[in-house]
Every structure is written in C-alpha cells, then in structure tokens.
Length: 146
Image (cartoon, rainbow, N blue to C red; front, side):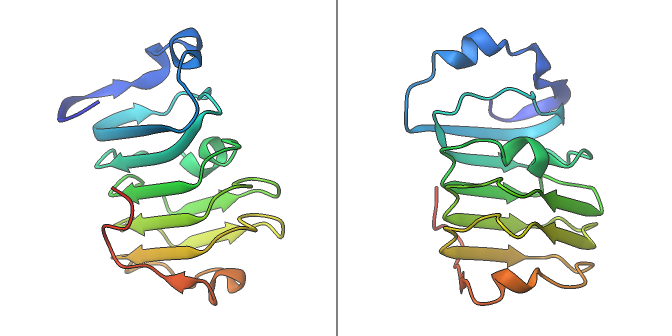
C-alpha cells in the first residue's frame, strides 16, 4: 500500500489473500491506516510501517510474527505506551523506532527480542527511558533496512 490519502482499515484484507504470501516476504505500508489486521502470514521477514499514526499498540500484533527479522516503524504509532510481551519477536534482529512523538513508556518482557542485534530510536522526545536489556544493543544508523 503506497501513498494512502484517506484513512483505511486493513481488516478488509482477508487472511486467505495474505496466506498466499511466500517465505521471506517484505511488507510495506505507507500512509494513514486505522488498524492493522490481526492476522498476518508468518512468512513476513521484513516490515515497514510509515506515517500510519496508529493508536492501538501495534507491537502486540507484530510480536506474534514468528519469522519477522527487521521491523521499521516511522511515524507509525501515536500512542503513549508500547508493550512487548514475553515470547514475542522471537526472530527479530533489527528494530527501528522513529518519530513516535507521544511515546512515553516502552515495556519489554524478559524473553522478548532475544536475537536483537541492532536498535534505532530517533525523535522520541517523550520516551522516559529505553528498556534496560536494550541499552547494550548496537545503535543503528538510518537506512539499514529498505
């Protein structure tokens, strides 16, 4: 989806349509969307969500993608908290959080992102602190993923 000028709900995308996606799929959303679908195929390895300004915690949905290795969230979240539950993001290696201006708190379970190699956090003026476990992860420069 590219250059979306209106707000859409992606729940209209059927799980059957998404189930035909092959292994190693890259998924990219650009523009305002109301909600992410709750079912994505596990074949997704890279995802970019840009300028969507979602208000629901997208980490709860995206954390269940068992093959997701790279996640880039740019101006995609307008909420104040994100929660990464235990056993989520099991294969995630690179995470980019850019411009979640309202974000104040980031909760990270003990068994989350155990394979993380790189982390980019940019333009988060209200984020009080990053989770302790991520403080030793290599900081990323922009444009590492797409």
